[in-house]
Image (cartoon, rainbow, N blue to C red; front, side, top):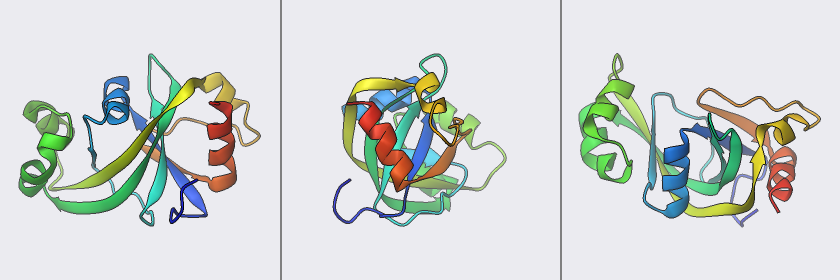
Length: 147
């Protein structure tokens, strides 16, 4: 774990495989969300790719969290989100405010950690719908599984 990161917990971000890969390649530097994670920045994020991949693929660092109106959100962060405008509109339908998570230091794991391995964790990991928190000990265990 890097210096200055939240020492107590990490966040697991559930992402469509396309977006997890875009973060790891450096194309996507902002993750847009409908809900605000309760984190201290900087925080290490574990990137979980949803179906059909169903595995942890790597990490990045969340360095900033901003909640703003949707117009400002798109103008300020849309180009770094790897979203098309119609996808943005569809995702944020029904809400007035969205949240931007600034992402840095993407790092792909040497080996993906499949869901069945994560579930073998003593606490019985369940992939989150959007995001979830894990204590640092659990997060470090997941990272070691990828070595």
